[in-house]
Image (cartoon, rainbow, N blue to C red; front, top):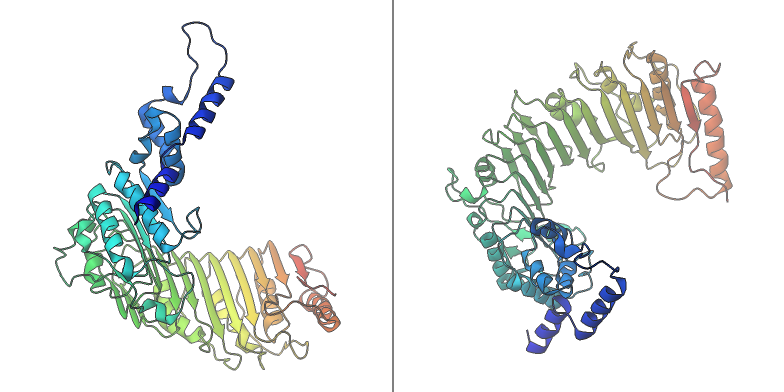
Length: 499
C-alpha cells in the first residue's frame, strides 16, 4: 500500500479537516443557548464514560471514526469500539474492490486499542486464499482481543456445486487460538479440524454456544469437535463437505440443529438434548436418532425432483419426528402412487402442521393425494393445518370428483383451522378438502385458495374462465346446501385476472 493512498484513507476515516472543524465550531456558537453565569448547558461531554462507549458501540465503524471531529476528547474514542463489523456486501463498503477493502480493515485494526472487542464481523466475497496473509493477521487480532462473537464469511453471492470444493478457499489458522469465543460463523473457508478424540487441541472452544458453517471444506473430525464444545447450543451446517454426520451424546447442551448439505450420506443424532431439528436434502438419506430424543419442533424440506417422498417420510423420518409439537414438511408426491402406509407412526403431540406438497402431474386416481389423510389421522391432537399444494400441471384436464373413493371414517376432534392453497382442480384435491370439512366437528374456519400459479401470470381469457368455473364447481361440491357457510370463509380463485 503506497503512502499517498494510506494517508488518504486515514484522513477519510479518522482525521478531521480544517473546514469541518470550523463548521463544527460555528454550529456550536450558533446553537448554544444563553445561560446565566456559572451555569453550563448539558452536552455529550457531560455523559458518563460507560454511556459514551455505549453510544459509540451502536455506530458503524466508519460512523464511530467520524466522531473524532467532535472534540479532542472524542478523537480516540472510536478505538475502543466493541463491535467491529466490516460488511463488503451491503454496507457503505459494498462498492470497495478487494484492495481498498483490505486497506480499510487493516487501517482500522492497526489503530484499534484491542482492549474491548465483543463482536468481529467480516463479510466479503472478494477475499480468498490469495489474501491469506491479511486474513491471518486479522484472525490474530481477533484472538488477541478475545472477541466473543466472530464472523468470517467469504461466501459468494451464488451457489454452485463447485463452490464447496473451490481451491481458492482461505484455510483457517489453528482453531485453538480463539479462547473464550461464544459464537462463530464461517463461510467459504477450509476448516481442517484435528483428529484428537479427547479434544485436547480444541480447548479454545469450551465456551462456544453457537456455530454456523457455510460452504466449508475439509471439515475433518467434526464429531470430536462437537464433543469438545460442551456449551454448544445452536449448530447449522449448510452447503459444506460432509459425508457421515454424527452428533455425539457429549453435546448435552445442543438444542437446535440444521443440516443442509447435498453431499451428506447419513445422519445420526445421538444427543438427547435436541429440541429443534431442520433438514434440507434428498429423500433417501437415513436419519437415525437416540430413542431418548424428544424433539418438539422439526422442519423437513425434501428435494422434489426425485419422485415420491411420502414413503421416505413414513419409513425414514416418522419415528424420530413422532414427539414433535410443530412440524413443517415439504415433499413431492407421485401421481401414480396410491398405496397407503401400513401401521403408520402416531404423532400424539402434533398440534401445528404445515405441509408443502408438489404433485408431479394430474393424478389418475384421487387416492394419490388422499394419502395425505394418513398424516392427519396419525395426529389426533392436531389443531392447525396449513397445506400448500403445487403442481407442474397448470390445471386439471377435466373438472371432476370421485365420490366412489371410500376412506375409513375418522373424526378430528381438535382441528380448528385449515388453510389450503394451490387448488387447481387436480384429482383428489377437492376430495381432500371435503374429507377435512366433514371430519372436523369443531372446525372454526377453513380457507381455500383455488389458484396459486407460480410459473406464469394468468393473462388469457381461457385461464380466467377456467378458474371462474373451478370456483363455482368447488363451492357446489364442498357445500352444496351452504351448511358450512360460517366455516368455509374463503373459497375463491386468487390472483386470477383477465387482461
